Every structure is written in structure tokens, then in C-alpha cells.
Length: 296
Image: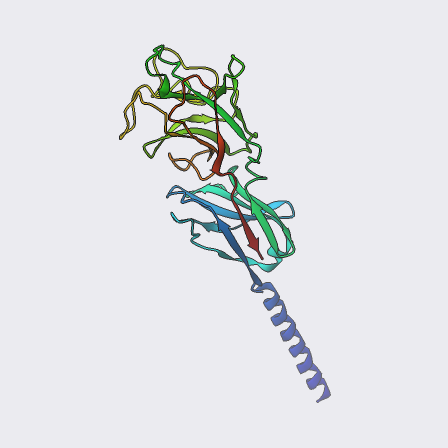
């Protein structure tokens, strides 16, 4: 009888051990929540999305994708993440990704970042896109690409003529990978690009292929544009830029839209009494940084 009882105990022990091992191998992970509070994000359209990432042991872990509507409201603000992953995260990063994205790694276009302090992180575009607090801008009105002298108010060039010779008119920080500057003139509420660029002392990316410039040459070796021909719908070229608004924006690269992106560190309304070839000074733009917080 004693042997029978001991045998039952042995069978029970084996059964309990087997069940314990099975449960250990099928444990449901303990989940936590990552919550975002970000203002100022724009609607990226159907081709792009926002994606959050936490940095764990130096490697990025996706926290999920979301969109923003025309009012800047996020489609999702709370994201379930494994608790041990959240607890180990040191940094949060927000990137802009293609909607159809085969690459599991973050894109170069990173918009916000912040290090965790306790259970929260303050997010800013300043450290990861660029610090625009000391940005300055100068420009002139002129049309050097057509050789004519009767439409000098129809072009804008980001250069400084105060010394008598042209020098770079923009003081801007070097952008992180995934971003470019773009100049704009806003005419009758319609933004028209002057071209994208990364260096303030060189011609912009479309200097040789612009549809707007004149046929004589490509203009000086600085960012800018002559609006001589092929005007967009609703506008007529040549035009008069007095009273229009000149803007420098910071754009994702590749770009999500033909309109200016949210970040606009410099802007200036051209005085109605401005003279051509006169150096004009830009002011601070409407949005120099985007910020927010993330909590875990």
C-alpha cells in the first residue's frame, strides 16, 4: 500500500512539472501602454504615415504607426507595448515612413526625439531635425535669368547685396539626413516653390531645370527663382512679388506634399514699397519647432 501511495505521488509530481513547463513556454507577455501627446503634426496624405520607435539597448523597436488629420489630431494616442520593452527604453523617436513600407528599420526622416526621464520623455524636433533659433535670412527681388529689365520684381533670390557683391543671404543650420530646405513665395494665397536646397551658398536643386525661370541662364549660385513663364493655375507670370510672403520651410526628403511642410523657420512679407536689388531682411517664421511628450 505504501509503495502504491508513493507511486501516485511520483506521477503527480511529473504531471505538475509538465504543466508548469507548458505554462512557462506559453506565457502571455505583460503589456504596458505608451501614450503620445503631440501638437503640430500635419496630415501626411495617403502615401506617408508616422511611426513611433523606442530605443532599447541601442536598437529601435517600433511602437506602431498612426496618422494625423487636417486639424493635427492623431488617429491613435495609446499603443500597447510589452512592459519589459517599455521599462528598458531610453529614447523615443518619431519618424515619417512610406505608407507601403517594406523596410522594418526607421527611415532617415526623423521628426521628433526625446530621452526618457522616469516614465516620460519631452519630445522636440530641435535636436533631431535642426535648431533654428539663430536662423536669419536676407533676399533680393531680381530676375537675372531672362536678361530683361522690365520685370525685376518677379524674382526672389536668397542672397545679400549690402556689401555690393553677392554673398549668402541665409544663415541656417545643417539639416539632419532626410530633410531639405525649400523656398516659397505665397502669391494670392498660392504657395509657389523656388526650389529645394541643402547649402545656402549654392544653387538650389532645380536651378537648371526650373520651368519658371527665363531662358538666358540659370541665375546666380544661390537659392532662388525667377517667375517668368509657365505660371501655375490661378497665377500669371511675370508677376510682382511686392505684397507677397517669402518663406523658408524644412521639408521631408522624400517629400510628402507639393505644399510647404509644417516647419517654417523664416518668413517675410515683401513691403509694397520695396525696390528691386535691395537687400530685404526676413523675420522668424510661424513654426520653428514641434514638441510633445510621451509617457510609459
